[in-house]
Image 1 (cartoon, rainbow, N blue to C red):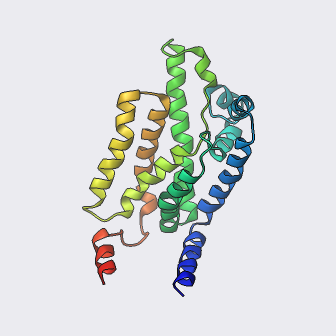
Image 2: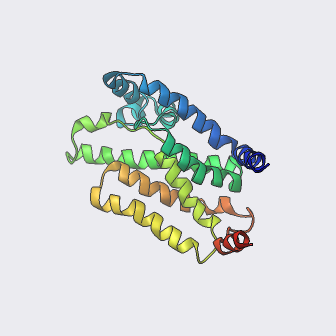
Image 3: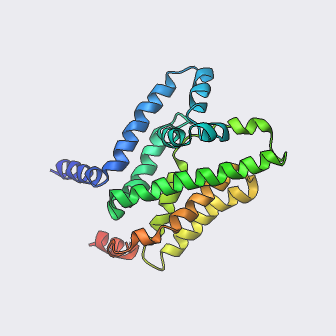
Length: 217
């Protein structure tokens, strides 16, 4: 009986976030495909789907879409957990369309800003010319953007520690590493925070105290 209730709860959770789990399913199949490629071919294959300066200059729409369908690490399970914790929560809260708008805004704008900064560095000989073909695929910008907008899902004062952790998590690498991907991730969080209008009218914020009280009873 408990198993059936648990299965129904899981099914309802997945159905409440169809976009998240369709995307995750696509990533599963593309990750399996990558794991069957030789390392040399994989790099060539991903570079053609990368949002690097060269590809953005020639095929911007195609690579902005295709780059979000691949995970260059080849590890799918960690993303399954992250999608369930963050993307699914955001989609169930905002609705599929608003969630998708946050994802697209974070992925596209952070990509253009970070690659624009890299192009600026190349033009001023602060980065090698080979950087125009840097491999840049993945779903982390959209994830960071969703993590940002989820700040408004949490009731005060609990949202402030969450926001502080988020800014430290993405801010420290930016200060320490100063790579274009660090810039992209931090920018994505700011874009997610800027999506506050999409969170309007989406119900009462989640209060951890109320959840803990309910669990005790």
